[in-house]
Image 1: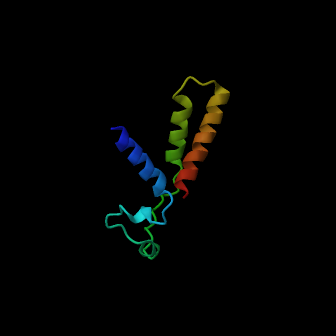
Image 2: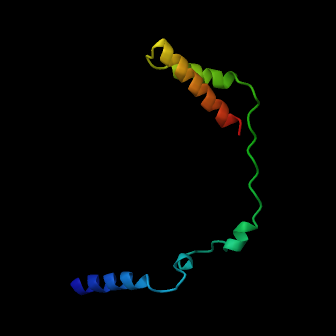
Image 3: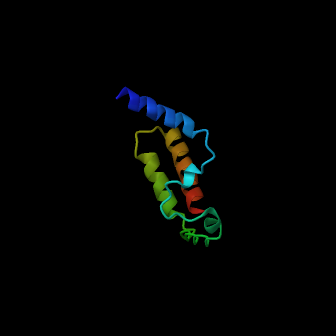
Length: 90
């Protein structure tokens, strides 16, 4: 058992000294890098309409969902609304 571990350790240590392309050793039918670069770009996901009622509702729910004081509720609502609008404006 000990000799098998020593042999395995030697193989692992010596494998770093080769110039073999180990990345492609176990690639099972993956595309070559030049094929990936010429692939068609993915279609863009359509953004929802600029109706802000959804983001207002999310901000209201985030602010009132916990027992925050008034100042914290205002700050949470503003941050939540800004985050929601940033996500849907992409």
